[in-house]
Image 1 (tube, rainbow, N blue to C red):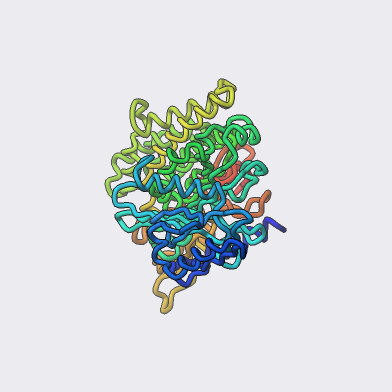
Image 2: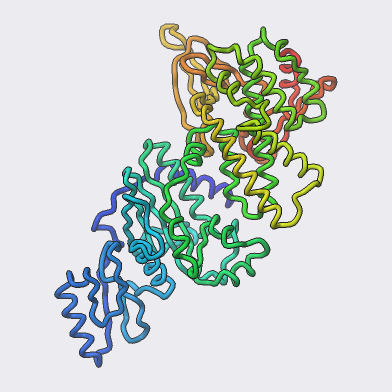
Length: 526
């Protein structure tokens, strides 16, 4: 029930949340209330004078009041906590918050690096309930600061920063505060999908006041500073060196994958960011690598013209007997590519041919063969062994996956449509087709309605080559409601037993399997 509610709540938020311009009327711009003991007459007079000459505070002069001056903060003074002697509301900065502001101030001044050329930084103290910007209705998380990094091209990065002690914090994925950056990036993509590219990325970081050696010991083996940084956890003692992470622009490849790549490969690649343990990550990276090959081979089979199937010289029953291997997928792409050399009227076929998957010495082909070897080594217990070696291998595999995804960028020009409804057009003029576009890594696929002269089959997936040139992906890629999780997933053929007339289908999303005699019948006819 909690999972059902959480999914529906997230979907509602993604569909309805919008970005608005920050104005001076926002509750975060609250006046200070300062309470001082009546015996502190001199300090009382100083505060009164300061209140009467408020503009002086913008020059950093707050008299005897403890103030952290930073000219990029949207208001001054930015008062510090002074214990019982002076009561301030909203509360003054705590020590960890002061250290963050000081590190950011030094960064802007060039003391520990400097922002990218043309980037303007602005900071705002984020207040608590009823005033500030909060997350998690059930827990109430209000990060201490909001940082804006506005680039020369007009794009913005809005970063929620929370400096605090983490002695009682659990590691992700059991820590919503640490994983907030993942939810914010998903939200950024959803807003962009609804409103178009707006050049705004939402992000978050935790700045731990708990020292690295303490937190790494608490969270367990393998938590290096680099691994913490990848999970958006920084430490006070090297914050200056890590400050560029807060303001660096969005990874453009990841943005395109998340919003524009075919869903069967986008969802798997992006899911890697949520995996914490390097051992689990490495295993899933290798599954994603195989999925990329399975998708490319399945698309290639769908593109192959009936009259050219003998030219490709493939025995599909042999590939799928007992379960296909990554090398089998590679061979299918290679054999189809050889035929695609003559498909000058099919740009997608030409793009697959130019991948040159047969080459093992450079480019896409070299990365593919390296991933296949890593997959085979892992399957046959040939390593890597030990957490450090696995983490290193995982980093290498991730870079290869990125290069492969970059090489497949042409796929964004050929979206996949799932037909939801087909109706005869008015006056007998074609068919009105409602469909979902399988793009990006979010479950809420965009809908579209169009007129086609030929009626596609309801429920099937089609590759849109432009105009009305739709290529059916059935039986090679099929949407099926998974009996295990009761959600619709996208399946490819993993094994085929021709004698028993049964095909085993495996989902791109989670690796779940189902059996289908219908797909087996279609393969026999193919």
